[in-house]
Image (tube, rainbow, N blue to C red):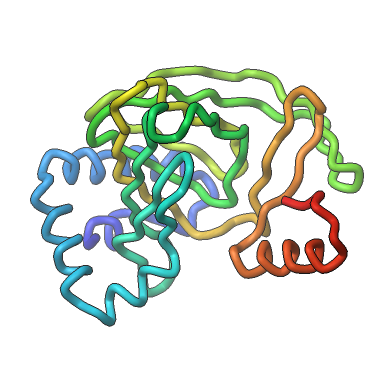
Length: 215
């Protein structure tokens, strides 16, 4: 945590070009010492106040990927999380939608593997919620490998294993855009996603109108 606080410039607009290599090095070093992760998770569980401060930002259980927040920077420059990308047996064969994030991020694979597909988005029309999405890159990440993404890059993560989950140590930076996006490649469309409270309000309003067409 100290390295992420002191060695990374979270304010730069060029995260991928200048800061991602620094964050990936820090993550790679942490991944080589699993005792760091064990000690931190034990500390969280033993400290009721710390647990209560982090729990609202975690998501478990989920269908595709469980998210456990283990540190939040006091200045909200970054957050550190542990992810579990479930196996096909665990997730029932569900596949993650193509999406983008509103922050820069880096990750290191702790165990297992996943396949990531990255996409380029063209002709994005905010008013009509239309766009064109084209494949950009596909690669497989295995234990010990690192990866970074800049804000807004569309991607999709797939655990192809029938039985082995993929565990990752993940760091996200501060929000740089008002929302993330989910893309429908075939339809050439997208919709925005928001924070949990706003998403809940949208759902409640639609349910009150007996309208099932909401995200």
